[in-house]
Structures are given as C-alpha cells and as structure tokens.
Image 1 (cartoon, rainbow, N blue to C red):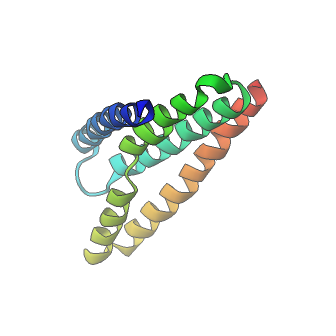
Image 2: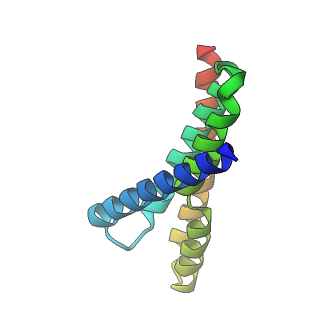
Image 3: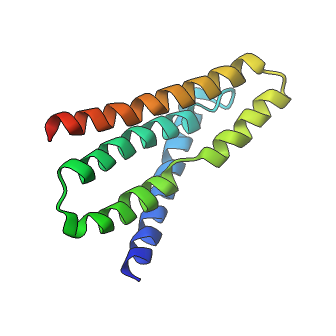
Length: 127
C-alpha cells in the first residue's frame, strides 16, 4: 500500500514539473514547435537512466523498490509525456509540416535513447 502512495505523490510532482517546463518552453520558444515536450522526454529519459543505473549499481536494495516506485513510476511517469508527444506529432503531420514532424520524432527518440544510455553509462562508471 505504501508503494501506491509513493507513486501517487511522485506522479503529482512529475505532473507539476512537466507543466512548468512546458510553460517555460512555450514562453521562450512559442507554439510553432513542441520543444517543451521534446525536452521533457529527453530530460526524463536521461534521468530514468541515471536513476535506474544508481538503483542497480549503488542503492541499498532494502529501500530501492520504494525509490523506484516514487522516482521512476511516480515522478518520471508524471513528468514524461509520450501521449502528448504522439498527439503533437499527429498535429504537425495534419498541418502538413512533415519535416518538423520527422525532426520531432527522430530527435525525441534518438536523443531520449542517448539520454538513457548516457545515464546508465555514467552510473556504471561511478559504481
């Protein structure tokens, strides 16, 4: 039961952070390209790599399941926005902006994967 509470609280924190990053990006870069969602997915993927690596290589196993529930499932689950990514890709395609849609999909997927591998590699190196 405690794990569900940690996920609940973490998801709330992640959702608030996602909204803050999205608003900041909208104010700084406008609405023409969904840079906020792209940044959220890249940041979230990098952090999930760091956290997963830390939990695997450094953490005390006794509390790592609670840390995983709170940080990975809760905070990062509330923070990352793959459903928003999918909708924004569809909107770019429907507006006929195929080049921006390809940049968005390619950049988000490739850089998010790079973030996960970089986070894992960093934590492996520190272990």
